[in-house]
Image 1 (cartoon, rainbow, N blue to C red):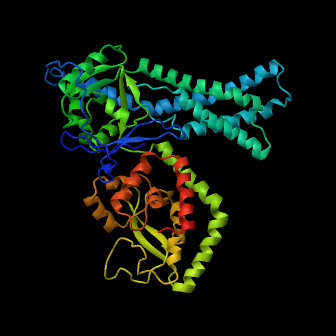
Image 2 (tube, rainbow, N blue to C red):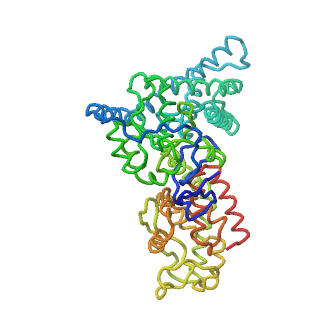
Image 3 (cartoon, helix red, strand yellow):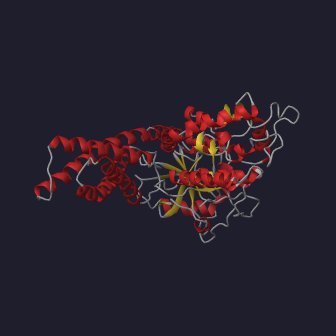
Length: 517
């Protein structure tokens, strides 16, 4: 579920206010199939006063020696290179491990005479190779090769079981559709369990090797004196090879400078009050420098439905990041678009041609209408659609928000807008990568400028390419206030999954059939 709140003095707001929803940041959550992402905006939650005050003023420790600063900078540089090395190592381990496991399962079953039919060895080698590729693809798009936070641990087995289960079902589906088995059916059942255990073991091995070969992370604590004192005492119980406390500061102001002076590689925010101070900056800057940022989870946060909580020295924490979708998720969404275009082409191509002919007969030339819209990351592109309004419809009014039963629409073409058939040419924009099938609708540059001035966080819609349809379109209408649409768009971003896209597409069909405007 989504959690949206914005700080106001010492008060906490937990209502899903679409306006204040823009002041949210991404909390790294469990990206397993169907899992929900959660955002937090920065409520001034009541602080846990159970920890005794240490009476110390916040500090970055004693004056940090120059060599400590240099050592911290070197640590960050070395740790920043770990994600790529980790990815390569895990890909190699998973590929070799999964293929070897498939061969071992087959060998044991063959030795025990549990095989009803035996084929030449080369058949199994080819089948196991294809199955290994399928498993690696599922693990990649499932996020198991994404950058892993240096600090905090959480169970990996449930996620690994879910993804290996998806890969096993894909292998079974190929056999069902083609009649060609990549491996004996009994092997799939055994692979489901042992494959997940292997994937978890590989990540534990790589993490342990990195821990032994690289210096321990240095953590800067941010919070009130009693909070930092309690957390420091808790963390110092850990092995010095696992973590070092770099220092303590009271406020998140000028956080990058504090990180530099303390020689820190990671930051732990101990109060919810600091969330508004770190998003979007300096969180994005710290990300670019390879500095991890964690937020301690208070009881009030847990009650509001946070998921994907990790553990650090006995403290519940979540990792923060400035962007919602990971690299693999963005790539999966792009692959989803291309597959959808390919599968629906036998229907959409003839329908587009017939609609173009109808528009030409009713409204004359031109049939297509191009308009500048704001796309991903604020880039402007030319969106194409069928013309349904009279020429020069905005010559006097300028850019205005679309209305219900818009008087500018040519008679006989209103039903095209109600049925969303005027959007069909935008499939070309999807093919070019300027748009996606499901996502926040693109708006005019003039209107975006107005909305960004009036609605905090409106620019967050641009984290993914704009869509032909979206959550705001199936829940709202043409005349729905943009502030309310923003709330739906942000909910879509933080809860994205292929399943959610499928749900929106099915609801879009219902909206079209019901001709709801």
